[in-house]
Every structure is written in structure tokens, then in C-alpha cells.
Length: 324
Image 1 (cartoon, helix red, strand yellow):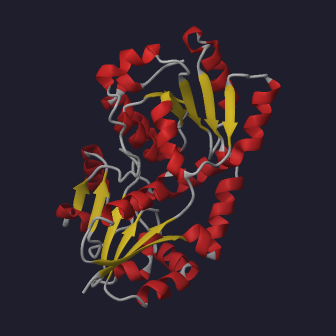
Image 2: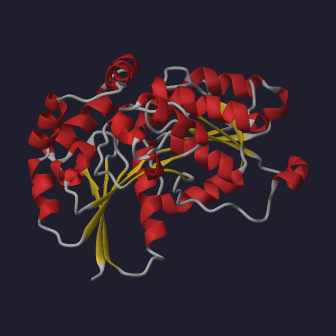
Image 3: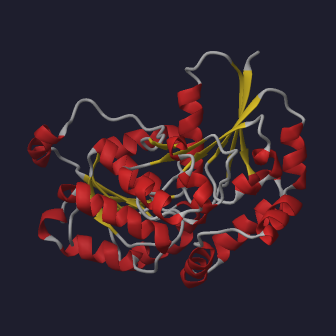
């Protein structure tokens, strides 16, 4: 009988959805699959929409506090009760499907009762390097597999999580971030010096989601560097379009182009045309930079798990980091 794949995610931050689409792309080439459905709780369920609203409208300080508070090694009966009460309809929807496998890319959703059923294969995809968030703790003996991004993550998981996981070490798999982006073949690191002679060089800035408050300062710092005077700065502003467009216009930054949301099909083109990218240390972003071997200006670190992402790129790919 062919399998029905359910991928549970949430549109808060880029990494969770990027991982979901990456998993779907990989599974599309797999036989014996009847259907693949991505369920974004922030679009389909009321409590998910509330989570999305808080994420989109809260200050950096408040969001950082939420991440810190929820970064705990154990979960309580209340956590389980609360999640299943809020997502009762999601449990019901999945329970009504036959022969399913569940992939989870967003923390807390592995507390759903349906994921505790022994006859359902449930795979957790971790979306950050090094430092785990609270999703790592929320596993029991019925979880089929936990996919982490590097050896340090696996070691941390074994050292800090409950004994149930330690009895099932074989379930922890080291696997690359499931990206949708494809690496450009025409330019590799060996040819990087030749790029210096290419006209219309660009710096691509990712300011589309959480703002750290230093974005205007980052742009000014880039423009003060002599070698970047002739570069075009393209800013992917997303929901922050109005705010970023305002400070770019005020400063009369003629070499800046501010874009709102762009179609995902165009993302590879923007990436490939950029010599340098700039953004905070999200798991998906760091994975993309490493895969495409782009030089990166790190604009800041948001929350506990992004500290781990920063440590990862600093330790293994420091040659890609540009200081300004």
C-alpha cells in the first residue's frame, strides 16, 4: 500500500518552511508514495494564526525572551495537554488518514497525540546547527528518527536529553539541511578571484523577517567600505518593505534596491548573481550559504539556537565570513 506523507510545519521564521519544502522535494523522487501534504499550522488553525501574529508583531526583545523560556530540557503534562487541546482538529485530521508517515519541522508539534501512536512513523527534522531548541526534548520511544545537522548536535542531544533517547541512540541521524536551492555549477570557490572583474556586482541582504534594529547601520557600514562603493545592494525586505524603503530613501542610497516578497522560483537567480549575502544566523540561511559557498556578512544573532548556527559557520566555514 502506498504511503501518505504529512509534513507539519509553521510559517514563523524561514527555516521551518524551507525544511518542509526541502523534504517534499526529496520525497517527490521516492516511489511508493500516494500523496505528500505540507500542513502549515499558521495558515490552517486559529492557535497557529495567533502564534504567527505574535511572531510578526512582537519586538526583538520579547521574541528572544520566548525562545529563552522555551529552551528547556523536559516537557510537562501541561505542555502535552495544552498542545493537544489547541490542535485537537489537527490530531483528528491526521488520525483519519490511512498508512501515513509524519515529518515535523516545527518545535512542539511532536507533542501531538497522533505522533505518539506506535503504528505511525514519525520523523523529526532539526533546523538549527549546534544549539538545540526545545523541540529536541520532546521525543519519546515512539519517535522513529531524529535528523540533526551535525555531529555536535547529536552529541548535545545524547548528553542533555532524557534517558529514553539514550536507549535509542540509533534513531539520531546526522543529515544535511533539506534545501530546495540548487548550487550554481558555473562558479566555484576556485574561480572566485575571477568574479572581481565582473561588472554589476551585488550584495544581497535578507531583511525580510525578524529585524534586529541594526539594518540601517549595516547598510551604511557596507557603503563606507571603499571596495563596495560600486556594488549594487539588493535588499529582500519582505514584510518589512515600508520600513526599509523609508530609511533607504531618506539616506538617498542610489545603489540600494528594496524588494518586497519575491517568488521562491526567483531566489536561486538572486543568490547566484550575488557575490556577497548578508543576514542573521538562521539555520536555513547558513545552510544555503555553505551549500552555495557565498561570502557572508553576518548581521546579528537572534535567540539561543542561532548562537549555535554562528558557532558552526565560524568554526567550519570562517573563510566565508566578511567583517565590516
